[in-house]
Length: 257
Image 1: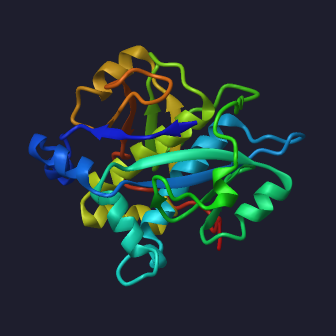
Image 2 (image 1 turned 30 degrees about the horizontal axis):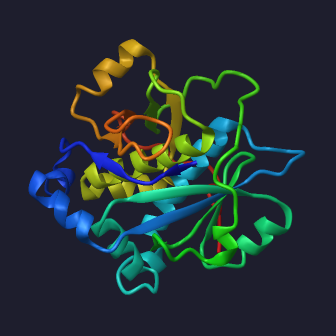
């Protein structure tokens, strides 16, 4: 379920410097941090796959923009160190007492329709809290009981590649990357609009025809580093903002400390 690294295409202006060839070595030499995410999967009531993916993507955005993660916030130094290196993310799973213990660590719990994901400030690659280090990474299988409906208007669309097979945890990390790259790519006015609307987004698997257009259209595209599950350089997610602005999410208040 890990996505240990991501290579970003230098298509959006906000990404140019971070993707320039002469910057790659500097980012690799920086201290490496990872953003931990934990998805709650109770044996009797696992979340639906698409709901879990969308909740994970929102969790990344809410961490990036939280008061404690920006400016002089106490999480801000770790966020800056993480973003100066590779934006690694690892998704683990928990239930019962494990979930309750994870909830005692500093972080944010984000709720979807039925899914719950807790995101934590970045930690050194070899410095995981013991409560999280012991959680399982692999073996999570989630499903949708029916094909997801057509996404409504006013949402960012995170399109999964139709050419790859990934575990649910791997996909959660990849759509988190996609949401983050879209955040980087948007101008400040559009970022603030998205944030105030409650980060409306949808995750869907692209058709092959659409995928060709998405990955050749100047959108932020996630390329995997190839440490787990898929080959290095694989394009996993394309991130598309809505054409006409973001529609507010009714009653959006998914975060508990």
